[in-house]
Image (cartoon, rainbow, N blue to C red; front, side):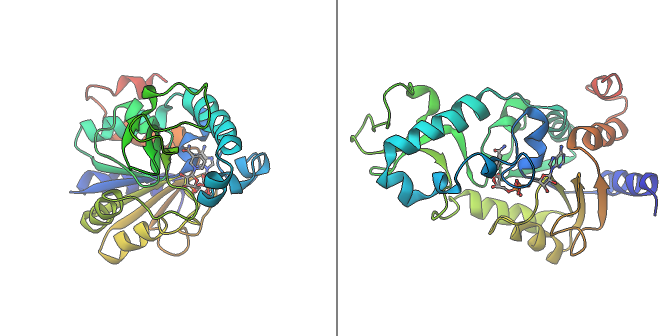
Length: 259
Ligand code: NAD
């Protein structure tokens, strides 16, 4: 089957869908200047993955915070949404997307205007106290005096991001599984499928009857196992083309045709 046929099939599937859910990984933010973890140019080539281990963070909070400040708040924190983030927000506004489940922590879906976002691994725009579990907005703290201490109890503050050794937060886990089960089309964008339990969500969607559309620059763990339509290419290009076809004539369509 050629690329155009695949693309047209995807458009038709989305048009007929009653409950499409998007599932995003690091790949959707690559064109915003945030590299993925793995592969060429991946963050694990420059940073030690131990940085995101809970025990390491508790044992060496000052060192960990210095690196987290650089990675999360200087690098990720200054990135802007790209066309693929905006495409999902526009598809939600026009009723095509019911929810976005993201493994990303960069807050770019929210900045693009997506409303129903499930942060499966947390979000750097929030902080949490490990002692009293009080949540704070990122803006409640300056990052000058590290490690951060809780304004309520003096406990150690951590970005509200799931570290290795931590469970996926609730209610995100329950909500994400419910959305996967409810979906009739599940749109995966830029995820290797190597991070668990997140990688089980597309499988749940498939088992409960959803068609799987996948957007990625290369094949992944999902492609030959559960994917029905694989759209090979960069997230901004494929999502721009999809949204141009789906939203032609609607409020935001010009920005995709005129890009
Ligand atoms: P990953 O790093 O394992 O893989 C990224 C995937 O994106 C790969 O399959 C790659 O082929 C694809 N990709 C790269 N550029 C692309 C593009 N322009 N368009 C489309 N696809 C592209 O990512 P993962 O599976 O999401 O798992 C890593 C974990 O680390 C996740 O929890 C993820 O959220 C987290 N992480 C988050 C960020 C972020 O918040 N932006 C960045 C790095 C890692």
